Image (cartoon, rainbow, N blue to C red; front, side, top):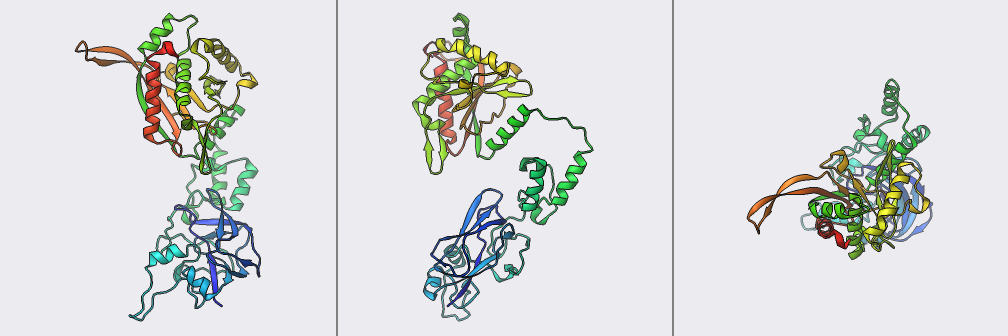
Length: 418
């Protein structure tokens, strides 16, 4: 029966290698097609290596906590010629990939078809490495292995352990140019980096700053995008001048955002697996600057309470947040956040949503702009503010995000209905 090598598959477009975390099989085990046999860790996720056909495990080459490049042999299995043929494997021996025949009369499938049929086994002969001891091989884009030359974000188990000792994370390595294979940051690179920064002036980051940094780092693991719409604010300002007590500008935006989300709650949902989880309630947070950081108190069910009922609770939450003592019932659990950077004179920005949220709405500083009044055939001054929406691109596309922003702008043109 054919003896077939099982090799490290191409686990993603930018993945050059992976570390074996757990061996799920043993020599002599009988396995089915597409059965999980290794658990491996890339710089992106924990993933599984599976079989492409049924058979019996003969030998395990890979060792836990060792790194292997794409195409490296992890194990050997024995299978029937029929199973090997189904998977597109060479039933004649260890070659794994079916080679093209020298006989002009014989015809085989194209190389692309063969690669697709046996993704965990295909590797050209020149890329086969010695399976007796794991080692790192320079990634290549030749020979049918579409692996980028550089993989600078990969961290070896030894490197991860050293970073854990110092309480550092991968984002802290952004300034290091790796000297290892494929641009990898080695332990030597890391230690030199640590020695260099120890010669620099340093101050301790506050717990608040560390918490904000961790939150933003987790947020940035998602594909975020941003859209912008100019909103005329004259009606809002007119309404505010006539109101007593006067609602904050941020509160108008909170109320408009809540009503717009309530019309289609999917826009504020979270993608979990293959499902979009809709929010149970329209709870909107708002950013309040405090010393060395930001707090985000939350207004619960902002879509069900009119603007006039929210002024008092909103003002109270702002005060408590500035004192760093927001009430527990107004902490966490929001589905979106509003941040008003207009008071700082900022006219353009890219707000980042919290890790547990899909949306953040940014209000920029207002500016007088000429607006064409078709009825009177003349330009008139209008106070215009950019509203900027950042969102998880897995949930929304630009069109849907733009429509959400447009709807917020429409609602703000009739503030008395908020």
